[in-house]
Length: 303
Image (tube, rainbow, N blue to C red; front, side, top):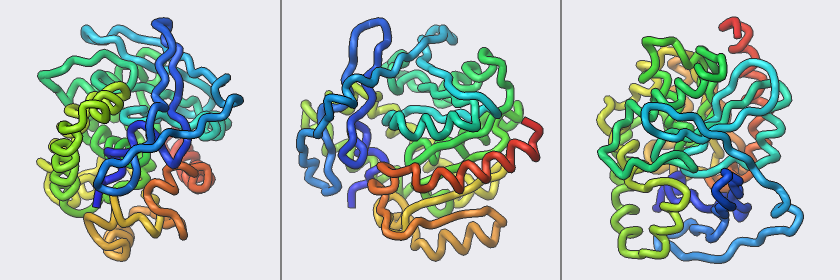
């Protein structure tokens, strides 16, 4: 079964991707929907005229020779919610910004940030995001992610552990326990398929460098099984849909994931009736529980 957390890059649950106004023209990332099956079928998205009036402006920081895209909204404890392989829907950002200072940023090779085209350096991805937060006056922050960024959060916390940057991680739509090589191998198969379709590759590459995405998963594959949780330097909260048989169920049964998290003292929640893509498109369903946990962590960590 195809791993949606890599394929969802252009569209999520039929909704439009964000249009960036970067000062360099309008870049519309809503050109196609990558369906659930392994045949990479495409269909045109439906975009409402009212939505097209919504423009997301990205600012840029010069960090170690790269232009790093970011934007900030809201007030409260700092919450980093990166955009790597897709953009957050405006409605979710509005919810997050009610109680948090939301920092949305893309490390180099992703989103509207500089593309290096190799050699790829995962340490730079971590330092890019840390430097954005530091430059904004936030040496410590909470983290929220789903799917690709759901895996990115615990990984980032470990990479920045010496700085104590990431004080808590809410991660959805990714199996934080198990053998991460399963995910990486699935992504490599997808990469081989996508390389045969120049049009599809170009659409994905317009949003992020797919080679960088695959390299991130290979970084995870180099970790010992379960280590995103067992070696976590900060508290974790996990959530996923009980019908997520792609990103989660492909790696291990839901019951095994839930039991493993419980035995490790990691809070988690399953959302009935949602598969990977479905919950991805309706994260406002999960947000109240995530928000409660993040606010508790902010209080305990003195943010």
